[in-house]
Length: 140
Image 1 (cartoon, rainbow, N blue to C red):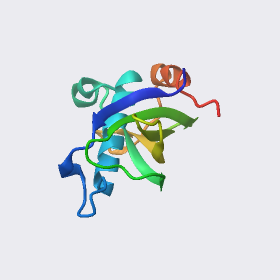
Image 2 (cartoon, rainbow, N blue to C red; image 1 turned 45 degrees about the vertical axis):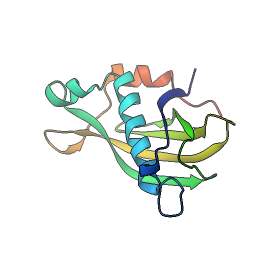
Image 3 (cartoon, rainbow, N blue to C red; image 1 turned 90 degrees about the vertical axis):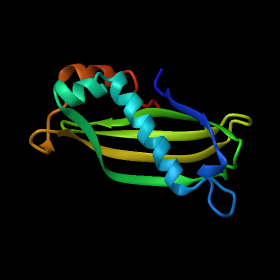
């Protein structure tokens, strides 16, 4: 399986800067949405974060590359997989594609720490989350 479709939309004119290209902030907004999607797939749903285990992955380092421009009207899809699973950390890879031609437009890796939202400290990844994450571990 490894990569999952974690976000899909189209670029609106309000997502673009004065040059007519998708704004940098919108790329990271898409990544934020994608991270929420994969967390839920791993069992860390919004409800679990708010009133359950109170665990959430927090980005501690990002490494990003902008590969091709996106413009208003472009349909985009984010694919997400996992590059590494540690004791308290996980590295997510997000790749944003233009749907019409399949062009890779942006990619980033987010090293994250699993944060206990009560103590505000890193926590060990629970076994059930780790087991579900194995299905999305990158093979390349």
